[in-house]
Amino acid sequence: MSALKTVKVVCELRPRETHRRESRAPFIRLRGHWLEAHGFQVGSIIYVSNTPDGLLLSPTPPTPVVLTSLDQLKAQFLSVGISTTRPQRKDRP
Image 1 (cartoon, rainbow, N blue to C red):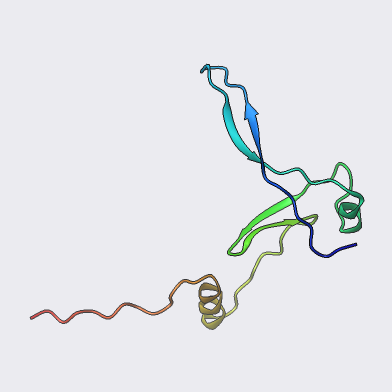
Image 2: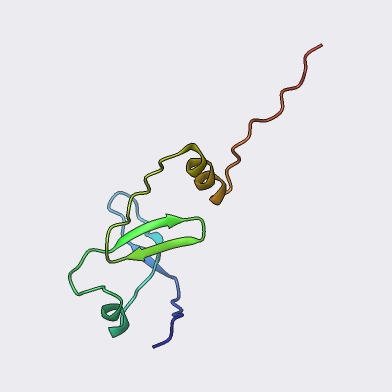
């Protein structure tokens, strides 16, 4: 079983009740026995998390991050590209 799978994003057409035109939406279909091997059982719920690198699919709920110090909070912000320093104030004449 390969560690990397590729899936194509296709277009799903949804009929509209209030308009004459159809609505288009991106659509991803995943199937295969490899899903069961990774904990995705038939009928189970899939948890989708938005991460800086893309979407993360998991068969279990994400573990909440508990930060116990200001340094950990700063590290968490920096890991997603958010600055933790104040911008320099311009001196007013």
